[in-house]
Image (tube, rainbow, N blue to C red; front, side):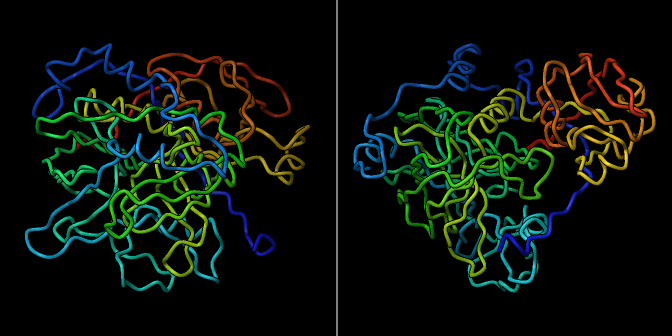
Length: 405
């Protein structure tokens, strides 16, 4: 398959910052009257102790499942009439299409069971048809993380707990750009929050376990390993997926991916599937990225991102040779938006960004993520190669907000 893969380079708009913004009311109320700001931030950001200590591919999952089961929920978008359908992880995989193009076409579309698998993108599920996916509790007050494509278009959902209890849920906000949404459970109950793992340092070959509701079968556990890190699947400039071989199917969307100690390291989101079912190639949003975005949504109802107003392209060996560069690395500025912050900061078309603040930039995705993590309104020292010379400038970060609930 690798020999036939055609790599394509698409311009990417550098827009992002996942930095924490000041707490503000969300539609219908603030986070929770009895939860302090610092407490919520701490629970979102701090990795917790292992839920269990058993590790390794031969270790029993029973203790882990028992520990994390109460934190995993089923998300139902109920129609007025008609049975709900499973929210399918983003799918791609026709034999005559390359990997990157298929994901680029299908990311953001939920493919219902029994629909055409010919390789053409399906229309998005309409909320009134219903959907069913997974999620997990991240705060004892009842905050739940799931995929945006599970709740897209819905303001209200039903959250089913592992013991069968059902609660109404309100969608606080969504981030389509990385496919994360946050739901608040509206009802009194004792909610058990997950423990966060370290997605930055999980390694290829590490054991992972997925828990969710494939085909509506709640609390289903599948296991595997991390197959690869840093996968770019054509979803956008923030692609940084974990690839796993744990079985992920319709209804797993938005569910947690755990490490061998029962800590969340990812949010199950997409699959490669020529047949429409699991073939052992799944993709999860790294926990660190999902956690940062979810925190902003819980606080403000939306995600504030930085934006510098450029289109980016990777520096290929051919481009490096044509430009006389000493190495095929950096982010090539393909376009500069008139009156954008990059233009006002002195960035020009054809510049190759090699350093942004203290970070080395190897490709366009590196710069997009670096901009994403920069504080809006700040000026970041940036080094570019222009006409064979190193040029230093201060790049000011503008702001942009994602869609609200």
